[in-house]
View 1 (cartoon, helix red, strand yellow):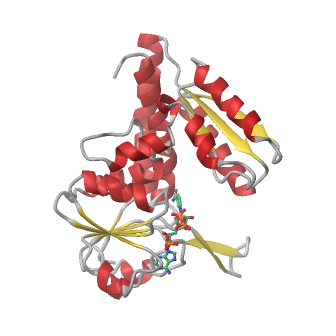
View 2 (cartoon, protein in one colour; view 1 turned 90 degrees about the vertical axis):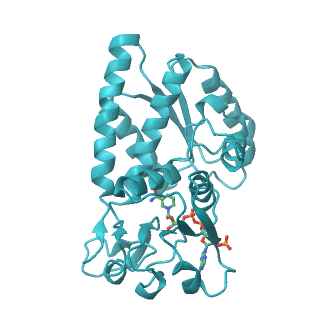
Length: 294
Ligand code: NAP
């Protein structure tokens, strides 16, 4: 292997330890306990797991969390009314509505209902708009994209002036991470399903972010030697040797790309753990801001 492994799990652990310290100090010096409310509608098993993990991490670092689990047939008004109640609750500094919502609910309206000051997921349209505009900053950056930037920063590779190619333009990963890289003065290219000749575009990248949801799509000859490769994808592939019958792989063919890249994230253990670490950090930031400490 020539690439240096970017240890997302270890970095997330370090951030959690720093936050544990910060949360303890907030309590001791200011009597503040950061609070996160999670809102889960329906019984999607993956969403249930994500919410459980987020609340577990909160407990580990001393953040107070409150879970709201609503039935799948919850109406729009009931959901928005819960969000409004959480907006008004001074013990809550962050509101996380787990996506995707069941199809009958208007996701944009729900995200719009979250107070900007408690939008720790960073998906409120105003926060996304500020992210996209020159000279403006969101109150909170979306968690997975913020985690990606943190991982790149910890490689020591300078972002400014670099060619960054982003595979994928979703609202939760591709688009916001592109905006964050642009704010850091990278030159960005965003690719998607209609992009022609992807390898010729990705080979230009000093920083390559793969967020497409296609197992091991990025091959060795797609990557510029020495590039920083961040693999956001989480894909299941059949694997009879595993007890559960599958294994998780990223959007990057790790075994071959690690021989070309300068730095690379593994899957699992790369971007995934950073998403929760950034959510915890945003919640602590929300609590500090609410107390006038920022
Ligand atoms: P998404 O909403 O499905 O978006 C996928 C993007 O990839 C779209 O922009 C799509 O293009 C593009 N795309 C799909 N197939 C392509 C192809 N063959 N060539 C070029 N572009 C292609 O996915 P997402 O929510 O961004 O998630 C992407 C991956 O990241 C998934 O595996 C997901 O599980 C993972 N993820 C991980 C984390 C984490 O914490 N680690 C967080 C979120 C997501 P169009 O726009 O043209 O359709």
